[in-house]
Amino acid sequence: TTRVNFKLAYTHATQNQGFGFLGAGSLDGAVDTTLGQVGLTMRPLKNLTLNLSGRYEDKNDNTRLGNYLVDGTGTPYTNSPNNSLRASGKAEALYQFSSNYRGLLAVDYAYVNRDRPVATTLIPSTSMAALRERANEVGIRAELRRSMSETVNGSVSVGRSERDGYRWYSLDPATGYPFMSYAASSALSGTFPMTMVDRSRDNVKLMADWAPTQALSIQFALDQGTDHFKGPTTAGLNDTDAFSFNVDASYKLNAKWMLTGYATSGKQTLRMRQDIGYIADLDNLNTTIGFGATGTINSQLEIGGNFSYSKDVNRYKIGMTTGAAVTNPPPDETYRGTVLKLYAKYALDKASGIQVDLIHQRAEYDPWAWGSGGVPFSYTDNSTLTVQSDQTATYLGVKYVYRFK
Image 1 (cartoon, rainbow, N blue to C red):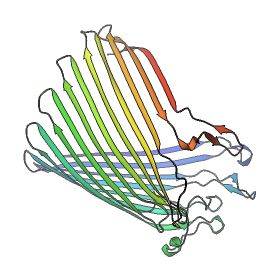
Image 2 (cartoon, rainbow, N blue to C red; image 1 turned 90 degrees about the horizontal axis):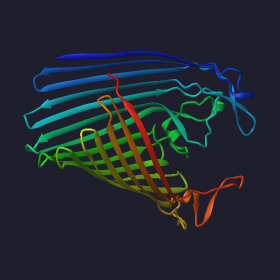
Image 3 (tube, rainbow, N blue to C red; image 1 turned 60 degrees about the vertical axis):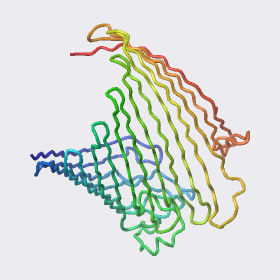
Image 4 (cartoon, rainbow, N blue to C red; image 1 turned 135 degrees about the horizontal axis):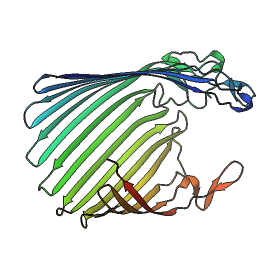
């Protein structure tokens, strides 16, 4: 009724490559990593199963300091050996209430601690407002699965997690990247990294399996998730929304032929802003459909193929924090792709065979970032770049397969 597994690992990695005139000959790179992992599965009661797991990773960068960067004033700066400590844990309880109902309750925990950069390295203050030494995240998940009939099964799961952290530090190498108070960080005007700010996440997922006949099977999935970021300021990423719906189906025509099909549709929204500047709601809408067939002609020959079509649209809703009108917002970007895949397998004998693959792909994409209104993208040296909006590719491959026994 009880099982335990564990893993212990130690890695010592080195690199001796030189890096030009700024480096001091060999890099003398060295990174030591210690990893520990343990898992425990118990069944204390007939209908109850408990799963516990934990993971610990300690990474120490002992690379020698050397001058590898010069800023605009000619001041040299060194590399920054980055040490980090990561830990995570999970506890799950699964209970079989009856032959038709099964429930799950889970708690997840994650922790990361990053060392401050050394004072001789450079992190441009224009790149972000500050960095954070420590972040923790705690989440809880619950799921209920039910067999509604001999042909229909369904489940619903909900989850919520909260991430917070401690000790922001300033990006000022002259003072050694000192820690600062929350009030001081709130007075900064830059953008805080989205992976370090406080965040709350909510997710709901519905799934259903339907098998009306022995030949036909259909699966449905609906997923809705939201993130809310709470940084010291409103600059950066504020909120995200994600929604997706998927349908998969398979139909067995007879003992030799099988048909498959799927459709998926989703929308993702990112809401972000500068401290003083733009406000952006970025929408991504995507739709994909596909269908395929496989079958056997005889005991030696199998053929099959599938076709898929996808459409991806990026929409840019731009405003200004000052309330000023945006006279020329970026246009929508649309990507369309179609892919046709065909194959044939011929068995020479029980151990070997030949397979032929034919793949044809077409893509249509007109990105405004690489040209708009007939004007191509220009680099600072006045060289230009254009993108071919319609592209096709065809692949034909033949391979011989031999299976060793």
